[in-house]
Image (cartoon, rainbow, N blue to C red; front, side, top):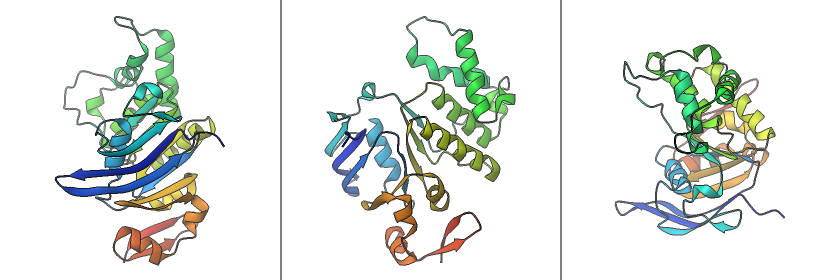
Length: 257
């Protein structure tokens, strides 16, 4: 059996003496598309920040390819898209092209300039997200949803081996949400490991390969097929209040009852 790209062992975390994560154990294999779902305040974003090294490991261990991680992103090519688009104020002096190409900064040596190949990479990644027509727009002039897609493009341009996303479709209309998940599926097929935090369990059940249900504890981690077999009682226990499923033609929606 291959070594997991990420392995979390016995992770605990406290905020102001309140425990938000307790004894989290999870393995994520290379090339998987893992969706982490759960209610607000469940500790999902906290877990991502620990993986990213943005928060310290208070208790437990994280291993990357079998090596002690401890927030050392040099062990992997990781790109991160945060929960909300940055607030680009009016007049912010950067075009979409400049924002996206800045995602290549880590590849460049000191004082090394961007070249035509880099500029072509910008066009390619914007095209994949169907926003190539925005390339010369000022980022501050775009809607919140458009800004978020630009930041997703910025994350993808470095061709990461692991892509971590925290509610990335916030502020994006339904049509572009569907297109975005199609892009993630393409990336998975290309071998990118994807870790996605979301509250939208209906969508992830049709796109992710694995689902992890988190609410302080890890209540479930398995294939999407096993996740789909969970009933309303089991999901309600995870969310801490009654949940009902509404089945549509091509998806299942989770609603509070």
